[in-house]
Length: 169
Image (cartoon, rainbow, N blue to C red; front, side):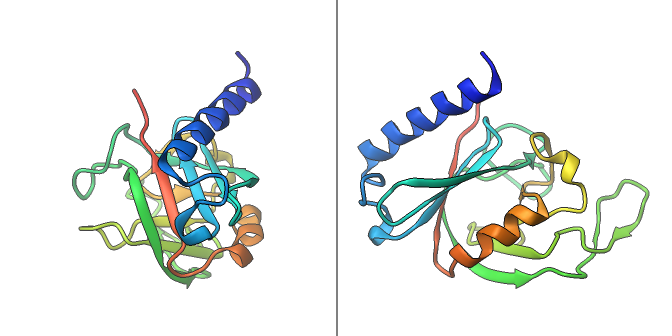
């Protein structure tokens, strides 16, 4: 199967799962828009308040498979979370411990911090490495192309629901 077929099948299965769980067909969280992250397909999909998929973006996620268990495990958490901060990340550096030292603008223009119990710095953000999208390279965050996070930003709000689907090895 090609990548587009896999994505279509993934979105169909997600739609079925969301319908069963009450998130689709306008029954989303309080009838509000939400984000769905599929770590296997490397996608983030924005759903409107009616439960309709509006736009899908490519992402990168944690280097390791599975649900986040501890700090430093390089896994992206799985479950339902809320955005608790919209941080203008311009100029914020990060040291990836790769010998290059701190990289300015490592998080791109925005960092949408998620309320993940036990972790403060997990979120959805831009990147200084757009070629990394579609791969497992992060320390646990969801990484998007800068132009994509800029496009998504006007639709994102504090308290917005973010669903991160489990992945399989």
